[in-house]
Length: 83
Image (cartoon, rainbow, N blue to C red; front, side, top):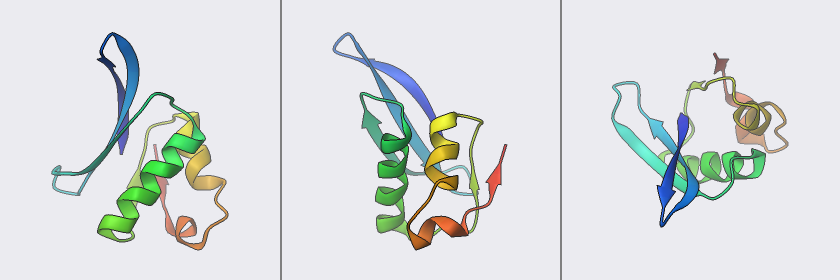
């Protein structure tokens, strides 16, 4: 999973992307904010569509780490964080 910012009609937006272990795009999520709420929304959306992953690789972004490690829902406890 990673995120990057892109311009949409002149305004910055964040594009979250998930790929499988072969590097193929699984899902994406476009949002105006890069925060824990947006990261959690993306993870929930992807899991609803594709099921629970065995492992999630993320960068050291505070919002991604917070979305996974500050979990209160059962599915979030199954993640392995790698930097």
